[in-house]
Image 1: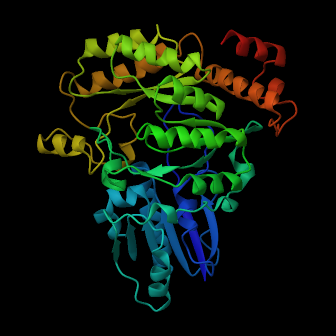
Image 2: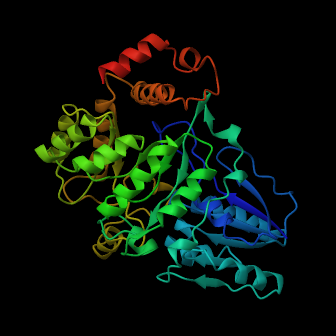
Image 3: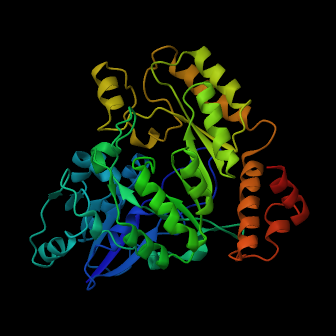
Length: 429
């Protein structure tokens, strides 16, 4: 049986990185399909989709709200050709009712241990309209290595630079942050994968550079430290969301190859400033994530926050506008108050105002968002700042013997800088 697995394209915002990372959810899903299923994968962000390719059924994996309309259009075309189409993924769960209008079937929840029965239904012409496993999480030990063999590796290099592979070491989140849907999608219980299963997956990843996509690794100190301790021999260099800033955790994270972490910057407190410094003390870079448009932010608050960012030692910053995604408290509150005026899912990209802010006009919030990007990258561009981070990781790889250049002239051709200057950037850090 042949499955055509598709990750729909989505439009990037001005200023976003031009490179594409390999999608994670699609290949995690692919690993749960029975071995008898032959899979052909297309990531529409890096290659054209061939609707004439032979297949028995189509599976569409959607992560972002900005993908759903394209996903629906793809499904409509395949169904008109007589093909069965199933949807899954984060955005399928967030937009299930609308997606049902374009699907033969939608799968809601986590697919480990469940796809054999679905494929049997498909073969016997008994495919259900909805497979709903929300809130019924499978044993986390069932999560195995993703099907990274489905990637066309050459499509995920950027100017000769080897980009990161994505993997996850846990699911669920015990926190329930205001704009976040993770607790709805994966439950309020932190579910750590057994360390041996994580290491088994690491063994399958040829790439030295990783993005650990877990919502937060800072949920169980003992497990977090065990994870970092066991990762040390692999000599990977990795990015992640929040980790704990305890000295013993940071020391192990640095030994395990922590490259840089995302840190939410939500106020101008000394706590934030000191937290950034603690990461840097252990050689770990910091990308600040700054959410604009919350009800507790006035225009002056946002301007003070932008000024603050110019005076702390952030390596990168990413600014977003509150996007009220379905199944979040933000969406429920703003809908109840009648403040959402734009329901076009293509606009739910965290860079466009789709609701009425509490303390300013939508137009003013949009202006402040654009001003934040221009201010932070006014003296050094995003590409230049990212170059410095790449320089550091390449030099570390050279030191531990794991550096594998895809382009021998990378330092000169890709970035227009020479190796001596790269070393001076590294030493200055």
